[in-house]
Image (cartoon, rainbow, N blue to C red):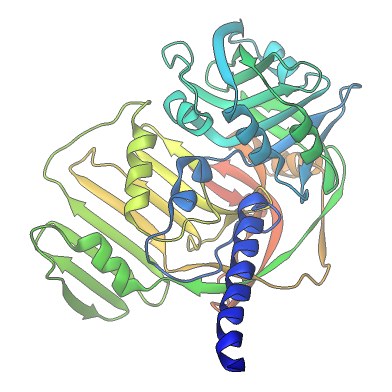
Length: 427
């Protein structure tokens, strides 16, 4: 009789613990770094594959009354997600242009006193913005968005900024609650920053030396066979052929579907030969490729939109930690998807991705100011070739079981994000 009571009691306790943990991760994914805790390639639930989970602003900058600015990270609650969720509950209307093509005015709004600004790693189309924030703003008036500026003393308006054309639009908002937003800004870590425009590109500058923590994680792997089945199986044929060629395993389904896995580097490439060209416009490309991303049926927790190329018809999704992008020379934790503008749709990703976080040992890295980095690039003759600069974490390729991520400056050079030290070696 005692055993009969213990069994249901144990089940109840297990269910309660599961629910509590699920709610904790859902409410506060920022503190958990939104890093996957499973190497399953099975389909994820809607909350993990919603477009608002992938297209999430990554940086949060608070501008004080005196005009000084600070980058926030490691807050108890994710301010970017809180702002996104808060704005989703409002009604935006009345796109009114207040600046256009003026670098000075553009900076004025990026430095507006008593505001909090969230930014995307790259511009997002208004179509995606409307989906993420549950709005219906006119894409013909404002095609893309890079920043959302929220005044902390005015519940009736926000500002949408687009780097392309240096456009600023004032938007009316109804029933904006600032309480939750202000609460999310408390605690955590802050770094002094300043918005600037360098080589016609807005960047976030770090005026002083500062420190950032390192992060350690277990490394997980996808089930490559399951991924091949997901990508290659069609309604007409589930027959998948496998061929081994050195370090490569090649999966095919007829002449149209091919997936190549390199066991040495962990790289995976899927080619889908569609036999027809189709170029997607600015308002449709990101939505189309996001739907293709979901087709992978892998856990997208910790994977965010990073960059888009309209000319190349590609979108890159990347792992982030505390709002900072993670880079690997072998593209660990990165997914690139190209549309079929040349008759072939292509996916590129890695078998390796971040698993469970390890306990922090408190190690930090001292980061130089942006001026020190810029001067070093200038002295090496490389500064004029740099089209962007940001902080990123480096995933070294030495170990496929655990990894320690270390921060450094990354610069956009010849179409790629590379550590700035790489350019100094090219003197």
